Amino acid sequence: MATKTQDLHILFFPYMAPGHILPMINMAKLFANRGVRTTILTTPANTSIVKPIISNSPIELALIPFPSAAAGLPEGCENLSSVPSTNLIPYFLRAVVMLSEPFDQILKELHPNITIIDGFFPWTIDITSKLGITQLVFYGTGFFPVCLIDSIEKYKPHETLPDETKSFLVPGIPHRIELLKTQVLDTSKTNKERQEFFNKVRDADKRSYGVVMNTFYELEPDYVEHYRTVIGRRAWHIGPVSLYSEDMIKSTTTTSTDRNHECLSWLDGKESGSVLYVCFGSLSTFRGEQILEIALGLEASNHAFILVVPKPVERDENMDWMPEGFEGRINIEGKKGFIIRGWAPQLLILNHKAVGGFMTHCGWNSTLEGVCAGLPMITWPLFADQFYNEKLVVDVLKIGVAVGMKEHVLKPEDRPLIHGMEIERAVNCVMGVGEEAEAMRKRARELGEMAKSAVMVDGSSYTELTRLISELSALHQ
Image (cartoon, rainbow, N blue to C red):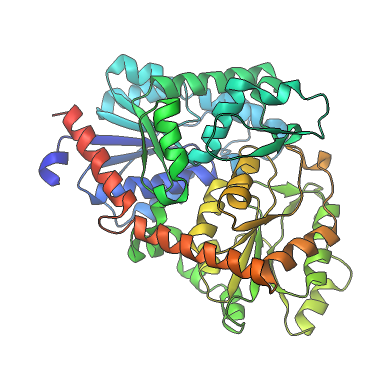
């Protein structure tokens, strides 16, 4: 492989958000392990995330200055997760666009012949095209949600609905998928600035050489083919990128602090498959009232759980939204629950033998991690493509139960409340006994095995990566 790849130099440019940086760094490691010269471009404040992950790899690191202050952000605010308020997100997006000039200069200095760019940097296509650099797009999602978005944008079936409580059938896709109008990510209904952004994303996608996805063929075969033949785009599935080797998982996603987290010792004392893991990702915030209902529903279900407490939208640090006496009861009654405030070693938890289910916001990375761990899921989407990912889990793969969220709402204070009784019902469906629950668990386990096989030598994703590198090498001989 080295003789074929020695002339390749690929620059990876991940978007500055938790769900985008990690999979793209792991992807870069895959190329580096195949002998490709690889550079990751990031901002100074994000090097604390990148450096530990690439420390044992031959990957080069390049820095691009982030104009926090010039865009009206606090100094050092260079990651979406560090933006202190949703009101400042437009300022962050503005700062990202201001990266275009230094990006142009960096490409002229580094001379990569290929770039793999996050889809949220649509302005890069003008620069790479001008410089004669082959650009591929990375999407932090799967084929299924992208195909749904394409169909909804093309046919607009929701626009004819007289009532927002009515569902519609998504046309022109391989499965019968019904959505409510309120669950649609409708870019035409956003403000003008955001609508223009999504139009630019679609244009950059069409102008790029192709798309690289962190997914595997066996997870969504109909939608890989639909994307390639119906939408008509070049695409490669090379994931799950974190599963390629035990060494990679240990070095890229866990630290000694993670492995020594006391929740893992707590899990060691639990029966196999008896614990539900509840986590809504690093960017999700909830009303305090909703956090209270989550705790009540988990307690009422009578199943053991680990709860990573979501960030409350209310910023009163002295306010505790847990039910009165909750933590005392779950510790006394057979140590039924474990509470985590802050960072959790998610991959280690999901892959612990005691964990038997996963309540998730359906972000693509979390969904894929749940699949890889062979776990059935309780789906609680909030925004973006998460409602589409829920449909994949619940209606196509049939390895999940929906908690009942029916509205795509960005601001947590505007979301409808999911009551404890609804949460209890979903937990018992996934963690309980019975033929349906066992069939769901069996399907989830089988998918987990398929994910692991996909990244082994001669597996579908391993072979796809070989094909991609060969094609890129042929372009630049």
